[in-house]
Length: 129
Image 1: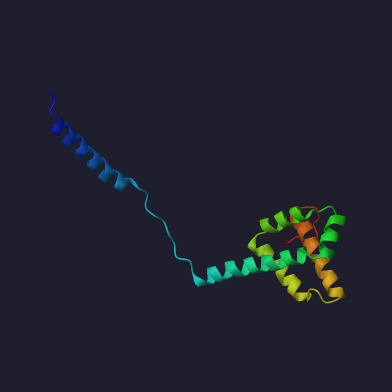
Image 2: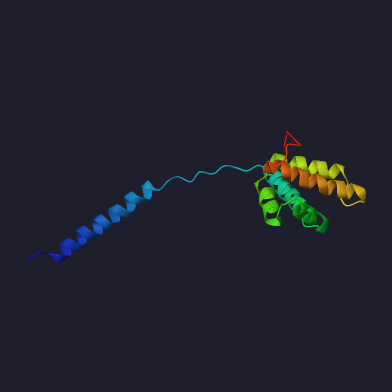
């Protein structure tokens, strides 16, 4: 006859052994420190992307994009796909134009749309973007 007590003891031993061995198999956590500068830059770029998105929400801009065959969803997708350098460049150009002040506002809106068209590959006005 099989000794149940001895069988349970063996099963318990192998279960505990397997659990201890599996702890060592786990992959180590890989982490890196994020500098304050990197964090501020990421937040700054997100803020600038949001400002550009607000400009794109203006009625004049939406009408201009619709007239040129760009849907709002396409423009939002293109803006989301822009690199950080493209966002910084585009925002710098908008800052230089004082957006929303008369004729300069209209020029800025047209510039935003031309940059989006350039990023999309429809035009090649700004070779550096």
